[in-house]
Image (cartoon, rainbow over all chains, first blue to last red):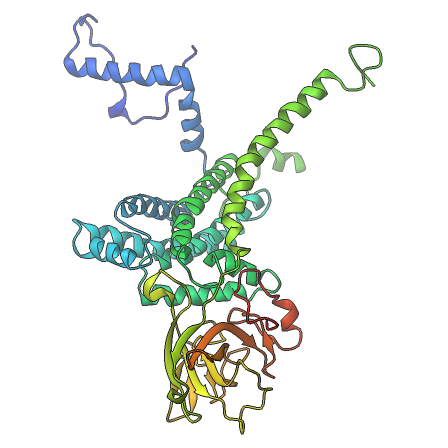
Length: 267
Length: 211
């Protein structure tokens, strides 16, 4: 197998050449462990060629002039990962039971469970942070003109991600099942119902019936923790693929550098 | 037509394409369609409604509303309750045609803007919504704010066997108190509204001959 060139590692991480007079047979335990690690990575890479993909993803050329505004997309993704991780563990304690179990399980998480208040707050406040970051990220892309050719599809996928995230906020708001979430959901479902022609059927679909019923909460829970997160994860993958494939756009105030040869040819 | 032998109308490659893609489609439909039907089923199953006793005829006056809690969804505790404001029909103000189902006027407490619960304020003789400032007059007609139609009503009847007043399914009304099958809040029923917001399949139907 031909070896790919090593990524630009800092000097301290590069293997040291052997000292003169040292024979290769005696190795310290540390060297043996490092050798073993290299063998494991090589074994995986020989079978998957993943290192090429990782290098394609991470060791990209970026244009001059990029700045902190360009980190808002990653920030949004980390907010999503925070929601995913805390959400999975909240699901271990939550019960979507309309007759009082849902409220009681949230009360248990908040008041009794070890670190429950912290994890629930991370999920609750993280939701708002994610929405804010999405809008900041969208504003950056809009005002820098980064949505233009050839990045239109990245923008469209981003808009779908925005809508899915708002749907996450809507479905998640019901789950604590207190007065606020109940009435907010009634109002939100009725807003959906004001769409002409399909509105009445859309609100019936959301409630699973003509009234807020026994399965409305579990329906919202299933949409909130299975349907939409899967879609969001898949679309984030597509979004990242397009970003890597197309590269990052330069800020609008950067001028393209002319090739000196072209300037001479003009003269 | 190209083929392996004389008279062949479908190539082997084409046949294999149709068979593999077709069977893949059938397999995908075999789990997608039942799952979709399962999720959409509640839209099409009609919810029954039982007549519920709310009191004796003398419990209700013409001049003020009595607050009655009724169960609109069984088995889910407090989330299934709804409130009806009930009074006796007053022929001097209730000009809509009388029949056996409106000797007692029963108004639903849900605001016709977006569904918050309205409260009857006796001093003002008005229904007031806490969410976005919807106001209704004593008859439940819109007096101000964003609501798009008068408060929904319930059918009421006198059970002749027991002599008690009973409350039945909900119905919606337009600004002339013409009856429609129950609609969600926020959906106007005047003019073009009744065509933009069609009746649904899953709402409990009124007494025979009524929406």
